[in-house]
Length: 460
Ligand code: B12
Ligand code: SF4
Image (tube, rainbow, N blue to C red; front, side, top):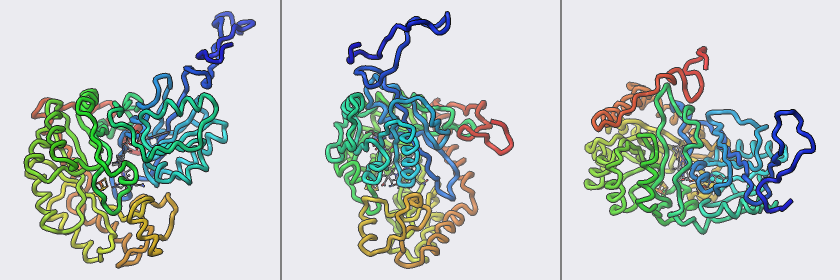
């Protein structure tokens, strides 16, 4: 039998049952061009205590899947919304990890599949940030961007010589190779809350030219901003059958000229989207609003007039703001945190997401806290951003944790989170009604919350 054929084909000596086919095809993923069954898993991770539960369709795995050669058959399982079948048929298992709080679960899943004799490759941001530790749990650890690299990896797998490490961190993929993401792999009905569909994730660029203190992006994506070609961006956007998006680019405020062109090209598509910050500039904000900007995640780090005006400006353009509020920085005293929450209410933030400073690997914040011997634990399960894993400068860890919970309660005291979220949803519905893009919620999923019964006692 030629080793280079796709699947091995054998004539059976005797059909088992009269109606059985006269040939049996033995699946052999190690033969060149034979389809490899690739089981891609996104491990579960704990959501912020205080925040209303939500699950967005993961982006890294479906962008990664687009980089796989066409003869790879992919099945995707998001453990946040469904259970993993450890008996599933697969040739190769891929684990895509994004957060530090996901890696221990990812390692446990990898261990279990390897115990059953399957080969496991790990990739994604979490893998890159925890590469050395991941080595002990995977046959191959993939570090960096996948575009243009997976043919080699699959070839190595087929020949039974998967390498322990594929390290492309210092040579990011040519950005023209990116996408479109394989969103068809997502089980759509699972990303619905009472019939309201979650946003789809999308990115128009990679990298970031800034260097913020608690952030790992410089380590991951390089310090240079790498925009995707506009024609590819528009083609991918036009193909997404969801009018509501989360543009996950690190910060859109990287280049005014790029933002202006991006928004110009987006206007005809009539998408509605949330994103990280947009340039603080009238012309850019005006075009962003025309292009469908719905709300931004904007870090609010102090109570300055600069921040007040920044938020007012977004609002003046009809763009809502979800503040991302990091508590426990070295300059934060108890009074500062209390004053900050009052300020958020004064400036009428539409939503606020509070987190506690967390010294994630490969950040300046971790380097400093290690030097000062202030890290209390490196149990990554606790690196959820709602726990205190270091010694704050001006208060005890317990007191910071109390203030974290107090901040959520105080901000949402008069208008609960669900009400503020409803108001935000009304904003987008209004915009959609105005331009004829509104799609009603799916009533057949009205009793489901991310694939589970919406209220206890109701059957699924
Ligand atoms: C989208 C996003 C989210 C979404 C995730 C939605 C979802 N369903 O998964 C949401 C908004 C929920 C989120 C939340 C948080 N996030 Co976040 N998030 C991101 C963001 C902006 C983009 C991730 C992404 O999609 N990138 C684009 C994809 C295409 O890239 P990728 O995943 O790297 O995939 C490529 C490769 O890695 C590879 N690959 C991927 N998977 C696999 C698998 C295999 C087998 C292989 C071989 C290769 C491979 O192929 C892909 C194509 O090249 C990143 C920053 C960033 N720029 O990456 C932060 C980031 C991951 N988040 C971060 C943080 C801090 C958080 C929060 C903890 C706090 C916060 N408020 O931001 C919270 C979670 C709090 C909680 N416990 O609830 C940190 C990570 C910290 C850490 N070490 O854990 C990051 C890096 C941002 C930062 N500032 O440092 N986040
Ligand atoms: S926090 Fe955002 S803007 Fe700052 S370095 Fe990280 S990705 Fe860039």
